Image (tube, rainbow, N blue to C red; front, side, top):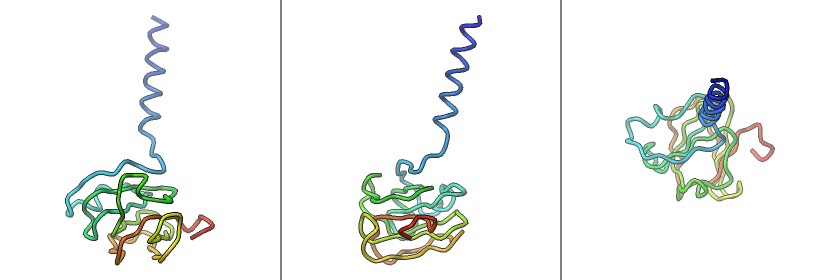
Length: 124
């Protein structure tokens, strides 16, 4: 009986760890009407299309290239954090930069963008 409890405890701990938020999440497809609903609090979300639809990346620490999450480029953002975020048109934080305000709703970026960082990062 004691051995069974320790195996159950290990399984429970592993399941709980799997549910913790990560710096990036796999992109998901979504309808335009639910763009804000799927961006978790304290996350910065980037969307494939300017209306908040298509593939989505959800970040807490940023990304040097959205292609790493299988998103060709992003055209809108939703900031559900309390800090500014910078989004660049090229990978590795290069090209044209757009700043997204803290807790700003869905923002059309005005073009295709590929990397993002919170203002707390040195490059933003």
